Length: 143
Image (cartoon, helix red, strand yellow):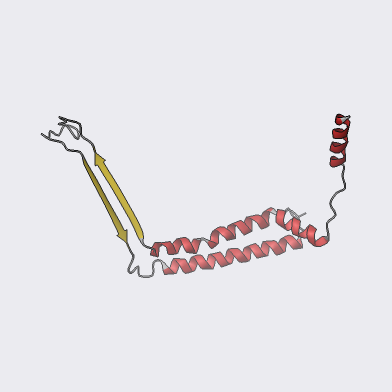
């Protein structure tokens, strides 16, 4: 009996009523799945990050390094064939901080150009979205 019940549930789930969409819902779903619109929107989103990447050259940079060596008792050769009567264990550390004071416009102008490219890609995405609506939500195959 349980098997018949499971079979009936499976068949009813497979042959259920299809979802009814309004025209606006169908257009929105077609635009969401349109490959050209998706590619244009992702390109615009990636291009929108470029001005931030270019301006990051103006941010301070911090770095650091550490180095150390350990010597055993009666060690005499530290590097290659250099003879040293006594080799000690040692540790060295250092750090640096860089801040750009003047770059002569080498960062400002590319950042402005990147901003213009980002706005252009956003307009391209809007155009692709409008073209998808004009195509009736087709996949951009000219159908």
